[in-house]
Amino acid sequence: MQSIYKYLFSLLTITLITTVCSAQSKENKSISIKPILVNELSEEVKESSGLIYWNHLLWTHNDDKDTNLYGLNPQTGKIIKTLPLPNVTNKEWEEISQDSIAIYLADTGNNTQGNRKDLYLLRILKSQLSEANPNIETIHFSFANQTDFKPLPANTTDFDLEAFVVAKDTAYLFTKEWNSRKTTLYQLATKGSNSIAGSIATFDAEGLITGATLLENKHQLVLCGYTKLLSPFLIVFYDYKDHDFFSGKFLRIKLELPFHQIEGIATIDGTTFYLSNEKLNFKGLINNNQSLWKVDLSGVKGL
Image (cartoon, rainbow, N blue to C red):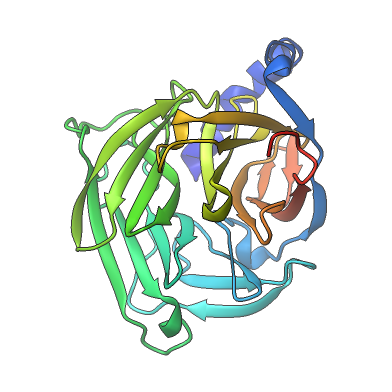
């Protein structure tokens, strides 16, 4: 977390100088929406780093040490249920996802030096989540095109990962590429304990990708993230071929929440999307507590 704050501090001066110019240069590429605040979240989830909707609750987790899953009331953001996961560790849980039978967690935070060799997904059957000792599978993986594991300066790697979705026994991973602000789509088999993530395509996200949600029935993918100026955004992908999400059309949506570190995204009905942000209080200049937001995309043309 400390390296993140150093990164944010280095950007703050740039932000104060260039916000107006940068915003104008990107204006014609996006629409803007102001999210609605649902509620400030409990301090128990001040590092909310992922979000899914399952069993009538929004589920989130922290990105460091804490091995609980927290079920939130979508209307109030209040914690309704806490599920501890036994016999696991949380080095950097960055995302949560699901398919019809299981929930997945990604221990894939890799921004400190970019050289982790212990990346993995956890897979827990939904039918066992409430049990005292659920069977938790570990899917170890590596990136096919990462061959150099020399330590890098903080926040410079192309192999940080905070977003993924799961479909048809495959996890689709979206990197958080600190220098280029692009994201590369990788695919990873969810069967077996060791796997290689192969790259499919790269997309110029113009920012850092931090979360994802997939609407299989609508053939849509939504990514969330924030720019180098700490301006959060969504990118909606649609009309793509199979699961090559970058092969179709896309719409960028600027979220009118300056200096918010949006990390999680989920939807209940495919039109209303819920977003969570980590707590970001920095030297008296930024003071944004962890919160739950929602945006309505039902009226967005073409979606």
